[in-house]
Image (cartoon, rainbow, N blue to C red; front, side, top):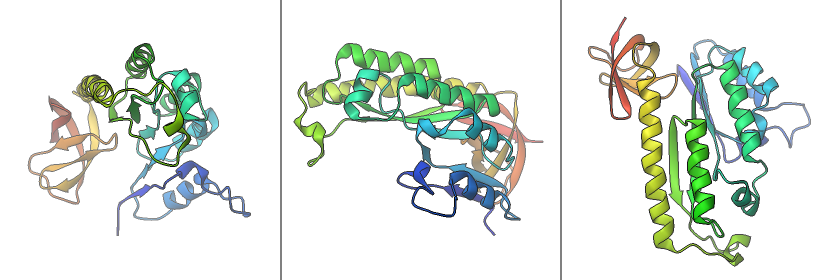
Length: 238
């Protein structure tokens, strides 16, 4: 009876690597897409390397898939990504976003970013800010770096003081709010599909919170966006 399904996991894009039947993440998405009654599918956090042009085109052939994709960035500086041992570069991340936007025009791209990783200089951090602005994220989850015992990073030099990590996080959160507000404003005047989850409030397929007067939980409505309230929107039923 559920109308929206979220596929998620610790490392979602690794699905199928341990299987011998050939199943992949796309196999699972297609299987859910074929279930009668399921009307919307969302994906959890994706590694940028999976979002190739072919992958994006395959997703684009499934109309139930919501046009909101969470790509874990962590840093917008290649030097820091290398120290983090991430398996992608900013250029690869940029191509992943372009591929998704080609198949899903206007889609919401969300992300996670860590500020103050060991060895991150102020210039590195500024690169991250500029990269986030370039991508134009619809939402950003920002965290100051914190050491975790047992990881190689605790032995790295160039430790950023905790106060500086927190300051950088505050600065990037402010940038994220500006980008999020800009994305929500871009929806004004457009018609979106909203699933009402609480009284008169729900989420559109782009995962923006929308207030819809005279609506009831469980309804899926066509809604014209009329105004912005911070990082949420307000609209009317069509």
